[in-house]
Length: 186
View 1 (cartoon, rainbow, N blue to C red):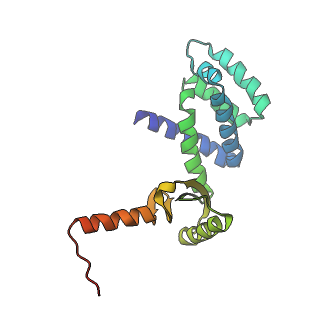
View 2 (view 1 turned 30 degrees about the vertical axis):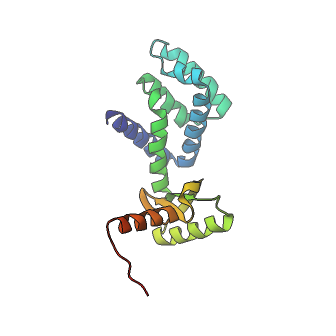
View 3 (view 1 turned 120 degrees about the horizontal axis):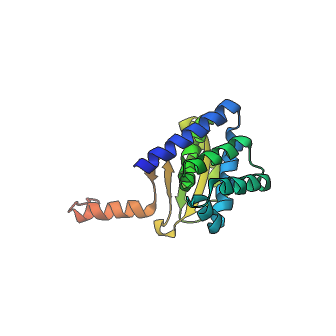
């Protein structure tokens, strides 16, 4: 719980600076690139998190990385603050929190679609259009394939799950019949 609060505070502070300076997207990109670079190289991630390594040495490494990754001054100062306060381990969660703030600021909704087979571009476009009209937001779709759902879609919109999969419908029918329900017909 405390870790989430710390991450939210740092993300909110970074976002406020980004919004005030008009660099929301630039800092988002800096965060993404920096985390990808550092976390691909485990030794660098560990190096930045080690309190027994002098802060000045860690600052020097950040300054070298900033040139390599073309990081903004705002972001470099932010990383220096994290090092100063021994909070570099929070970076992935800070990124997640910053991403939520960014999406809200830009009126973007993240939608995850699970289907039994890979979605064709037309299907993605149709789902995107329907959700954009319903939410009155720009939609960013991520798609997953899960053959176990047999057919249909499971759509997660802002943590609300819409399950129209054939598997769920079959399971629901099975459970209904198992409870002793009778179906009358001709």
